[in-house]
Image (spheres, rainbow, N blue to C red):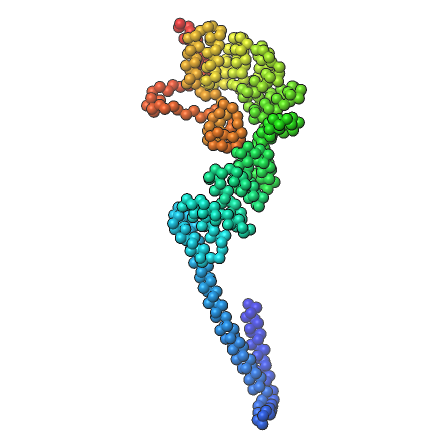
Length: 465
């Protein structure tokens, strides 16, 4: 709009000037080299304007002719760039499609047409990996480290290659460098944490997790449990190194952050007992039993309570039971302690307490009932019946990996199946059927007995006999 108004304004000025010159033509006389030229001022102005227009046209024509070689070069350069990016795109598609030959051809074509080694080296490295030439891929990734623009891409390629080839030390080296170069990268922080934790470098894994929290890659709440586990593991190492004060400090924080993780509480209670703080040690185990009743907690509780004989353990078990009286694990714990003390009535009472849970009979329940029948009545037939039931009973809770389902008798920071860190949870394992034909399973499978039903069956058998 403004340009149109400006053009109209110029036309008005020219028209006004032409009208003024027409009304005032004037007289002009020029003498030059013996020539006398007489004309009007309007003609002179017109001649000057014509000369200016011709001069401008000639100047623009000269600029155009002068710029033709540069335009031709630019056109050719743009064409090469266009063809180079097309080859790069086709190479990426070939990598995604798993065609190493096409990817290698397009990588070479892109390298010839483009002056951008960051892109072409990455494609060349990926095509080399696709064709199984790890040495060539490593060469390309290493060359990428020389440029700040491609250093992180090279580090990522070398790191992934080291993980793939299971070169742990090289992978840790590249992960540390990538984390220093790009501390804001969530991938670098996560990879360094995984490698450090799987390598048993608890302090380095804890530092990587702290950086991830500061950079907001993970929330403090999400990192609370793994940091507690790392603190527990560092406490164990500190205790082994003789630094009891550091071990107790780390274990105390871990116990606060993971109140339901029994290995942490057991270790913390052991440190407190060594420091002469038996009451605090017992409190820690009682709080853990109230959250997650694990049999190992009861054994540790007997230790910190000074329960050296069977009767003392029974008394301690009754105290511990008060912190989680309705859980089936409490009933089993009481029954086991009563059996050790020879208190058959208390043992049966503890087992009968499972009636309230109305849950399927676990194998440990059947084994305890077998011991009770043998110890109280010397009834080997009933004991054998319970042991037969134990073979087909529901599994007891154990440590199960949340990722791969691997079950273990004791907690470990790393899963032996998948290598995951802090993946074990105390719960019922998934029962996998044995190598039995489907038709056999349908014929022989029976409904699971609950505790009251099992007791009634055994009583009926004893009466019949």
